[in-house]
Image 1 (cartoon, rainbow, N blue to C red):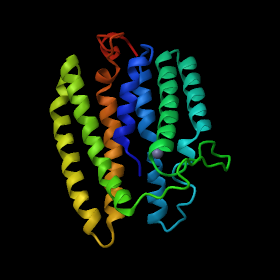
Image 2: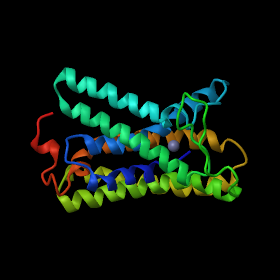
Image 3: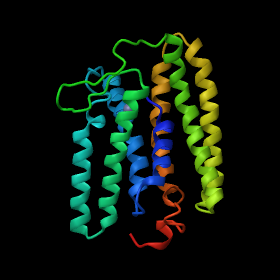
Image 4: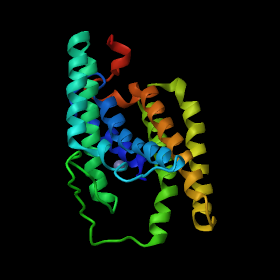
Amino acid sequence: MAQAGIHSMVGVVVRKWSPARQWLVLGIVLGSLLPDADNLAVAIATVTGGSTEGLHRTFTHSLFTAAAIVIVFQLIGRFSKRPSWGNLGLGLGIGVVLHALLDLLIWFDGVQLFWPLPLWVNLWAVVTPPEWFSNLMMPMGMFFLALYFGGLIMLAQRQGTDLGRVRSLKVWTAVQTILFLIFLALVYTMESGFMTIFGAIYLLSLGLAAVITVQMRQTIETTAKSPEGFTKTLQT
Ligand SMILES: [Zn+2]
């Protein structure tokens, strides 16, 4: 399971270089988050006793999927005459590619980058991280989400955007920090059943991060090029 918080923070950071187009950066951050939602498929397969093979880091981490998302959203934007949908799709595609590339670099495992082609790219084929490290990476997922939420709070306060949401976001930051500490203790002490509890909470946290990203879109999309934030100034 990968670090959604890192992926989303990378998405927020790249906004500095992205052109000022409504929903583009929102798409990049969401696209950076969403590929690991394939863990939901893994969870369902596990619960129903099915095979989990080919479910993680495959169809949601593929350059072809990214291209398909861009095309579909461009068409939606065209036909609905709302270019922001096209921007959103372009952002989602960029986000998915960023996520897949970052997984290649930091996740000590392969990615089926050209799914459905059976070609895995793995820069770590000869490296196996020690067990304590692999274990640590699981609770760290919550830690990085807390960092992402905390970063959004700082941005919001600095820019004066989405201030009405800062209070609840502080609560969610605290929740993720506490979850990090709890799972940090459990991952090294629980004999069995850890993955079931952790997997469920992880997927809920991922969904929460997506919801918060959408709620905080004005904060995320406000840059020097668009000082007011799009959601305030433009009609969708
Ligand atoms: Zn991933």
